[in-house]
Length: 186
Image (cartoon, rainbow, N blue to C red):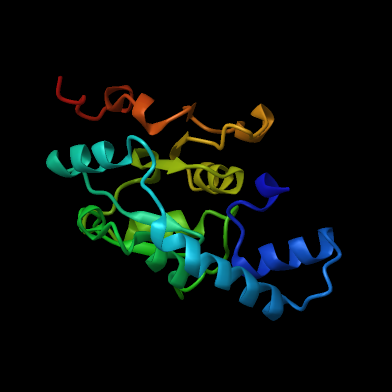
């Protein structure tokens, strides 16, 4: 079930879980309970192994980077609250759930196209590289005409990774030079 809802907007996720699990809750009640748990857990979110190395490497080489997420603003802020230095390396953040230019959530390509268009020198979609963990995010990236490196949950079924340009077990396995980027320093 988790892989079916990854990348969906919060209200869509809530509706899906309520219906699938026949929960006696309204969408608002469900979201209130989820938010309560998230408020406790998200501030302790750790960086994925290899994420910091990748971000600092791209920043060092003046490769423009941004975040395009389907997540809600409050949960995004909670997850990143202890990672301000790392977050400062990103040009901008586009959150599909709150950005008025994003008309449709993933698997529609909107969030990635809006994010790319916000760079001062707007890149062509085929020149963009997306890092994703969710099947809906991969589908959105592909629909946007972008390359996508997927780092899925290890419990995810292999067929859920179809469409990704590359699938890795960890960001630590990423080789930038395979995508025309400067290699990591030795």
